Length: 312
Image 1: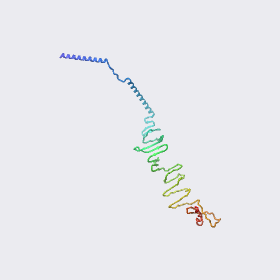
Image 2: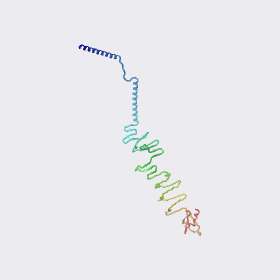
Image 3: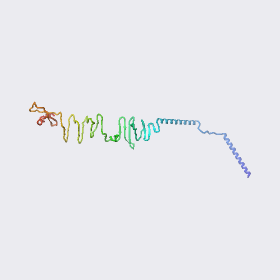
C-alpha cells in the first residue's frame, strides 16, 4: 500500500508539472503574437462629431442673443411687456396699442383722466352676439355715416337714465323736454303730424307754411286760435270762406270794420245843393251774398241803391 500510494503521488506531480509547462508555453506563444483592437472615434467620424458640436454651440449662442434682444425690444418686465401691464384688476394698456387679430374682452375702461379712443383707418364696428354666436346688434362708425342695426336703439340721459331718444320698427320716441330744429328750412314732414302743442321760442314768431299746397288743420272737437296780446290776421289772394254747417258765425268785438266795400247810390227826386255830406251808411247784401254800403235814410235804402247787385 505504501508503494502504490507513492507511485500515484508521483504520477500526480508529473501531470501537474506537465500542465504547468504546457500552460506557460501557451501563454508565451500568445504574448509573442498580441492583437490590439482600438476603442473610440477616429478619422472623419471624429471631425463630423466636432463640427456638429460646434454648430450646436453656435446655435445656442445665437438663440440666447435673440432671446435677450427680444426681451429688450419688447420691454419685458416683471409686471408685463411694453405698454401692457398685468394688475390685480386685469390688463392695463398705456399709450397707443394695435390689435391685428380679434380681441375678446368682457369690459374696456379708460383712465379717469383720459377718454377712451377707438381708431381705425376704415371704420370701427362693435358687434353683439347671443350664446349661439348669432349677430343681435351692430354699431358701425364709418367715414360717411354711423349705422346701428338692432331691434331697438335708445339714447339715455347721464343722470337718472331718462330715455331721450328711442327708435324701433314701430315708432320713434323723443323724450327730451324740448325739440329744437336749427335748420333754415325748418322741419319737413312727409306725412301727418300729431302733437298736442306747437310753440315758438320766446320773442320768436310761429309760422306754419305750405309753399306749394294748402295748409289744413283738422280736429274733431274744434280748432282754436288765440292771440292774447296781439292781432289775428287772415290774408288770402282769392276768397276767404267762413263756413259753419250746423252752427253760427259769431263776431264779438267792440268795432267790426269791413273795408273796401262798394257804395251804392240813388237819385233823389228833390236834390238840394246844400244837403250835408253823407257819413252814415247801412250794410246791404245782394242775393248772391255780396255786401255793399247804402246811404242811410229814414228807412232802408238798400232797394233804391241795389244797382251794385246788378253788376256783381
